Image 1 (cartoon, rainbow, N blue to C red):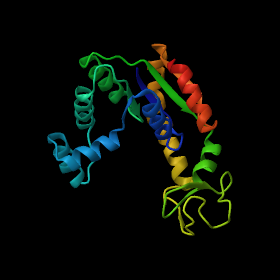
Image 2 (spheres, one colour):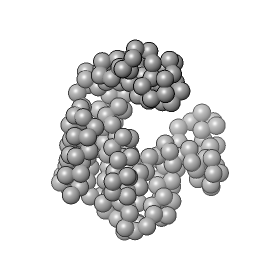
Image 3 (cartoon, helix red, strand yellow):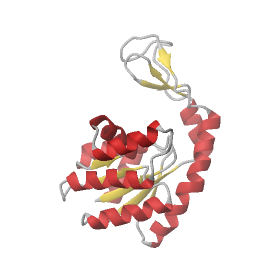
Image 4 (tube, rainbow, N blue to C red):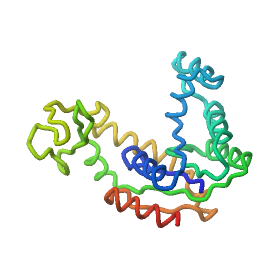
Length: 214
């Protein structure tokens, strides 16, 4: 199956994509990861993207389309694709449809991880990680068993992402609603949109997605 996972930053798209890769052998196509890999490998499209980024400009939809085109061409026909956080605009949605058709594929499901904005702010602003091993914690939901000491490696140093603050999270939510949410009606008209409670536990979200793909 070929699916899109939609949801604002912090909704859990990356976590669920990784589980789909592990459980179903699907391929996660994250445009950010593909872009970094292409630049590092100095592929033709990677060099093109690097030149744009070196000028301080945003990578165009056409370059992203080239990246996806190359990835789809390299994938076995029977392997499903997960588009993580892409498309983000109506133009990108049209480009994706054309690319899938080119490679003899079709979009089977668009799964939106629905979230409550206030709860998402609480989830993101409270998270922190061990500076040594990367184990994840949360001010409210998962404190280390011994205060100030990592459960996994015993380190006493922790860190927070600088963009894990309320203002940034609400700005990203606003951007998601303005740019990405409007692409949903087109997919809804095709009857392929399904919604999952993104605020449920990770295992519950995984089970809900598995049920949709069954």
